Image 1 (cartoon, rainbow, N blue to C red):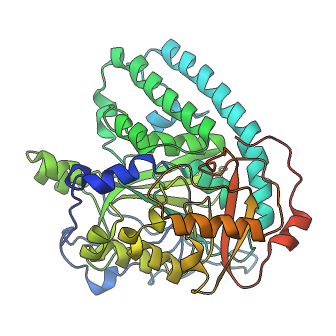
Image 2 (cartoon, helix red, strand yellow):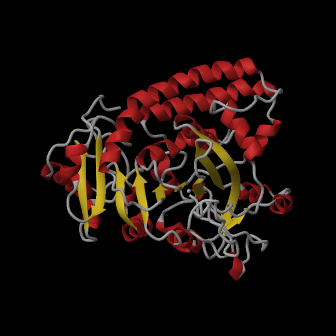
Length: 448
């Protein structure tokens, strides 16, 4: 049985709670199967988490002339590939450097849009990426898992790539659907300027605040260009990447992926809700550099509160297929502090040994008993927003005060209630912050 996600309106409390969540997968190789999305896959189609370039088990490894093992071809995937539409969005909306502008669109409108957006990219890279990326690099262990899980992080591939530049798989989960990319092919030329202005405004706010908001992305979902996908394509432009494929998928009961096919779309053509459901989850494969390996971002639209997560085995099954992961979260309304989000909090505690966050990560009363140490950076005088418990706020303030002062020159998600930047690394083992501080770059910019 494929899960059905209830609309946010069905749970007003959680929809409000997530209204300020952060707006922001490699690739597990999933063997193709022709079984219907709702049926269990055959034994031969069991998913593998071995990486983007995994091949069918029957494929013999190739050997080069030098006798060294050569990379085998990537296993083919089932489902429709919307790479053509993705490339249009990459060029027209995200202002990627390559690709043709479709003749139906006014190139002058695109040029004006890209001129403004490129200024936003440049400012963002100078003010945030160039400051945050080397700082985080000095904190990050060299042996982290290649898979990253980012709850409450729809559309935020920009921060994920800065935080985990070597990861091969990113999974973001949030209330917002990926969105149907097909309307791009039928969008009226006269609507282009309005569409581009809406997405440009949201991207500029994302870059300025270093996080996005659920209400902004809900507005994006009402445009012809799917906001989640535009945001992710923009991240590729920032980091010199390009899209390789775009597919949609649903989750089978065992957590494996059932890619959306033309037959699925045809069957749902006269059922709007069923058709909408097919475009909830997207898999964007991308690479950085012409010879770079394929990497994967998977976005899953899901309400992560306990009521939904416990009732929906496929998502937890899918996440658990990954084994140990690296994790991050930010601007998540402090939902991981809340009693209604105990399941996803418990999953993170069990499946990750290293997590980076603002104050909306795992609070000390859960981290310490599980054997975690928390290193703090910046200043924290209390939460600015969200569903938080005073005892957790007090615990976190005490944690920051008990640690040596370590300057932080950039925002990572929310500021505290006094506007201070702060960051927390939650990891197993001894406190590594002092050793990391010896090699971390000196602050070079004021927090944003």
